[in-house]
Length: 247
Ligand code: G3P
Ligand code: MG
Image (cartoon, rainbow, N blue to C red; front, top):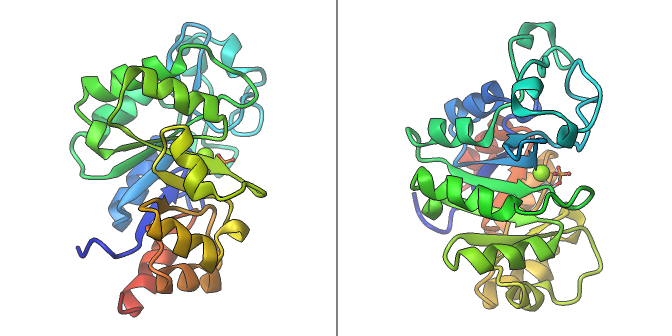
């Protein structure tokens, strides 16, 4: 694949078609041919990194409560698929280790988002880095966070894993700021991904992967601008559009 082709990252797995952040959603993304997946990581009471977007399990499981208050053994028991469709009632909240083990037999890029904005989860950065290294996946992982202190913390333990600042709006010259926290990529909210930002970031050698890019027009426009990657709930749609464009 030419290096300038815009890569497709499946947001929370193929979240448009499968229950987000479950192994079936990640498997679907791989089967569809996405180059990458994005996943959200939080810590259980016994410090096990698990894959779930919200700090509480209420929205995406049949349980209630905070991730931080369950042990891994307890959190595994919840049904993380039925809220989406009864056909996914077997799905559970995966551990990061389960995902990494599975990923060793693929060539997927892995964007691990450290969810340290609302609950800080002290120590999560080293726990995640150690696991990534255990499975020899450092060269395929991008660690991102809305909490940029987390990215600085990553750099205390590792100098090579790619890091990305997540942000919504109003950040001044993010292509320069990213470097302050040791990051080389911008994962920005879609409306912020203007042609100017794409141009400046490219000139600064900084990659841009906007989220969450679901509409045909937005997908087309970012592909035409040779954006590094897009993060989408609908990888199949994005891959089909990419096939029709000469990049
Ligand atoms: O990493 C991109 C995107 O997932 C960030 O927002 O809330 O979907 O985790 P959120
Ligand atoms: Mg995320």
